[in-house]
Length: 118
Length: 136
Image 1 (cartoon, each protein chain N blue to C red):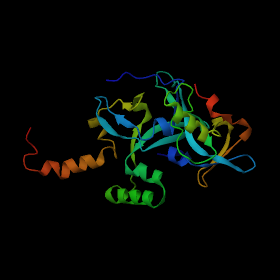
Image 2: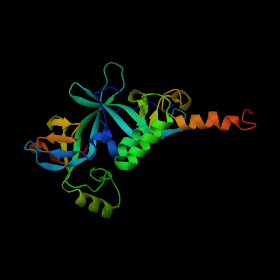
Image 3: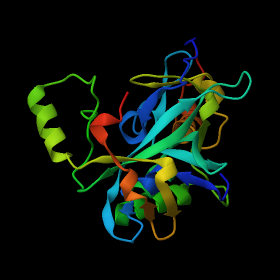
Image 4: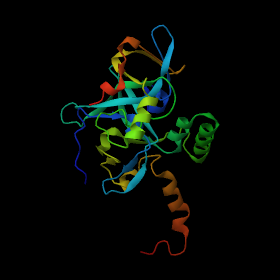
């Protein structure tokens, strides 16, 4: 590991601030996307964005996904609890302060989570 | 041998779909659980570069007193001056489903520091010293 290497656990639970410094939630999960590797190298997983939840009540358990099946009662409850959850694309992240543990985003670019999953 | 999966375009939520998942070797044998994930900054982006395993990775994830205890016990048990958690390169990952499949076998992974360390220690210091341990 080098000094530029980070851990997922450093991001999880990190307070999320808007550009004015107001806390708008915390990092609930980190969304990755597979990108083709250079030449014949295998695909790499890059951070596409962070899931920002406005309260700390655990995982979304995958119920944000349009295609996810499961007991409708559980799905409805989990979606209701996380109704304020949003996705911040990584290019909307202005700054990550790994020492103070804060992540600053352009809050105008947050999108509701239910619309972002393919 | 599991065929390499094309991950291009696939979305994964790291905490939900990678963390705490079972890592399985090329023969389907269980290696470890994913205790944390290494992210590296490249050209302003963050990329997954390794799966981190063992108490050295788990301790910092647990936070608080429990996390500090796990990390300090793990450091005490390691003989190297600057111990690092077990690390499996992301390029070794061939498939991600309900488990995470890696290309090397578990015996190849045992040469990686921090991977399967306590199991190796128990085998070398306890199991192999038992009478009859060398019998086939």
